[in-house]
Length: 268
Image (tube, rainbow, N blue to C red; front, side, top):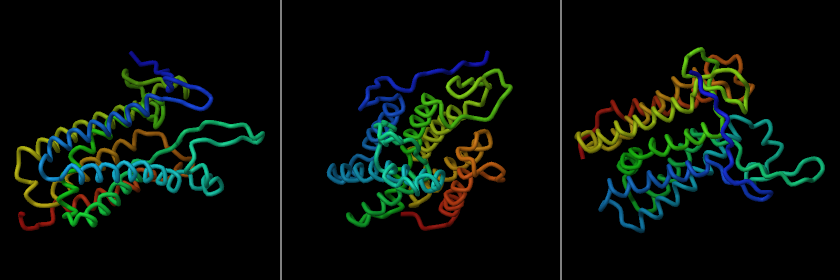
C-alpha cells in the first residue's frame, strides 16, 4: 500500500533553462490567490492599487523566502558564497557553468517579506495596516497549499520514517517509507483557506481590524509547528535541538496571532 514516489522534478531541462513542476505550482498558487482576492475585495482597492500591491507582494515573497533560507538554514555556506544568494547559477572548480536555480526558499522568510511589502503599500496609500492584512491573509493559505505540492514534486522537505500504510518512499532520496509531510501541510493549508474564507464571509469577526489576520497566524503556524515534528531537519545544525528552526521561527508568528485575535478592540 505504500506509495513509490519517483517523479522527475523537471518538465523541461536544457543547459540554460529548466522548468519544474514546483515553478508551475508556485505560479499557480499566486495566480489563484490573486483572482480570489480580486473577487473578495472588489471595490475596496482601485485597480492601480491592486496592481501595485500584487507587485510588492510578489517581490516580497520571493526575496524574503530566499533571504530567509540563506540566513536561517544555510548561513554558513551562503556567507561565503554571497553571489549565489541572488543568482540562479554557479561555477564549479573547473569554471563549468551549473544551473542551480534558487535551491532553498523559506516560508517564514516569505511571510516576513509579505509583511514588509504590505507595510510599504499601506504607508504609500495611507491604508490601515490591519485592515489590509485581514483582506490578504484569507487567500495566502491557498497559495501555500500549491507551493507545498510543488515541494512534493521536488521530493524535498521529506517526513520522518513511517510504518503507516500510506507512507511515501521517495526514491530520489532513499528506500525508507516516510510521512508525506509536504502533503500533510498542503492539505492543512487548503483547510485553513476554506475556514478563513467561511469566517470572512459568514461572520462579523472581520468588523474588528486584525481579528482575521490573528486567526490566520494562529491556524497556519499551529499547523506548521505541529507538522514539523514529522519532518526531517532541513539543516544538520538542527540535529539534537528540542525544537527545529521551523518551529522556532513559527512561535513569534503564533504568539502575535494570539495577541491580535484575543486583544479586545473596538469594532470598525
